[in-house]
Image (tube, rainbow, N blue to C red; front, side):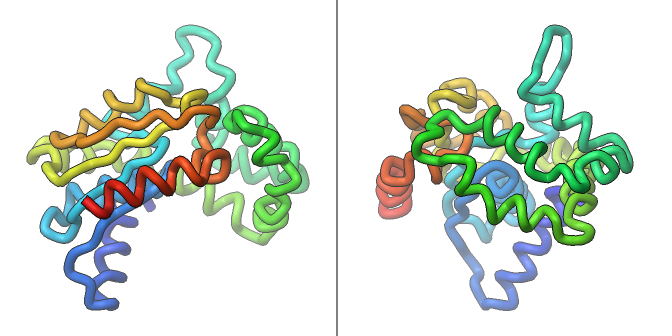
Length: 214
């Protein structure tokens, strides 16, 4: 299941809730699914807050090329290799998550690894590693569908792009420009890595409140 299928799930949930139009906010894959929702169901999305992400099919797949060492992104081909992640992470969930925490968290005093304990325990649930890895596999299986959605036209709703200074930083704007024509603001949050909401929640909330109140 990739982002187009999850975007449809969001649409179906909103229909069940009788919510015809919504503001969309997401981080990481939540942002990518939010972008896909806005691309596929254009009358339903009013605004999009896109936080620390890139859309597979619109630039994300170019981040983990290995023409030079790219230690931050080695986990992606690892997850994409059928059954490998399921075999090697089981029983070593803390090792895997500590690697991700260490790689992508900048403000480690604000977000110590101990705060990730619920994630470690959750990853031990039967089937969770496979479902997580399968999402990455589904995302890459949907590249053509994403590109086709963008070919019909970039979204024109207002978009707020937010990134961490020690992560995507200003480079995120090019990822957002790949699918959005109306970026009203590109914000780089200082002293933050990938996990902006955890590392600098006050700064993020300020930006979201301003954007959503406009």
